[in-house]
Amino acid sequence: MTMRSVAGKIVIGGLAVLLIAALVSLWGTNRGAVRLLDTLREPSIYLAATLVVLGLFVARSKMALVVALGLISIGINLWRIWPYTFLAPAQVPLPDEVNGMSCAKVLSFNVLQTNDRHDATAKLIEAERPDILLLMETNQVWLDALQPQLARYGYTLARPLENKYGMVFATTLQVDRAEMVANTSSNTPTLYATLRMGDGARFELIGLHPRPPLPGESTAQRDANIARAGSRTPDMLSNVLAIGDFNDVPWSSTTQKFVHDGGFSDPRAGRGSFATFPADYALFGWPLDQIFVKEGVKVETLEIGEDVGSDHLPVLAKVCVDPMSEDADVGSVLPTGDS
Image 1 (cartoon, one colour):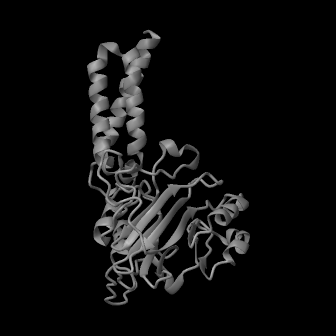
Image 2 (image 1 turned 180 degrees about the vertical axis):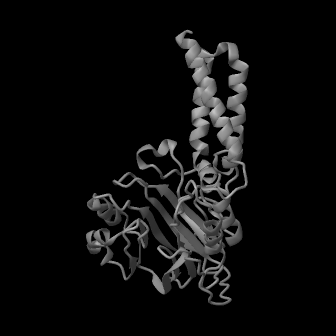
Image 3 (image 1 turned 60 degrees about the vertical axis):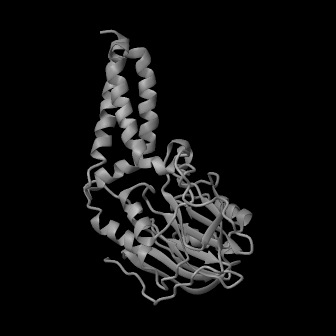
């Protein structure tokens, strides 16, 4: 058996595995192992395309099979991530029309609890000077290291934890309400805050960092709680900004239910995936860190920041709130979840 023949079999075998994974990923199940396949759709497209090209050289006699396996695999995955390609229509303008609106800079960042480059994150905060800061995976070490930066904010709410689900929220805006609640689990807090821009325009902020789907575990309760996190904010305002490390991709059924039930739009849709993980290979990674807007919350700028030592890249945005948008304050119901 020649080396070319062996290489050809490897190419066909690899494409077969990718196709099987793509087909299994369509299974409507709560099994964590299957749900994890959602995160691999974009890398799978690149890998399948690479294998097809290799097949041109090492599997010429089986070219029809190589192309068929590759196209079906790519087609399935592309169909699911289609809204996050440059060919799909945009859901919201970027930049949106924000004339006359008060705006705020946003920084959402999973710092990686074990990351000891605290100074790099401190410099990022100093450089960007966000009006809304959400940091995740923050323990007491991180809280102490960033105290000089956090001290400059008018309002800070922190829940340092040693389980990689600690959270810090800080803002220069007026705060009507801010709480961290056990929405998806008792030890994975979710932030709910009602904020006011300089012109008085109100909006609610959701900061979410749930646990990821894991092999051998059901995601049913997690998925339901994440969806509820977006659909029932405490003050039930029409203007909402949702940010955080969702440990999920935006095209998954879980995040799409969050978007659908909450009535959100995604400024990334039609512009690419804006991958944030893993930081070292984000070009071939996936977007675990999300930003969604609702009603009068507009996005003027959106970008992914540079690597500052975490396994995630920071999300940077400038958001504005239309003071003329409907302020649907219909009650005060704080979402809660099962522990």
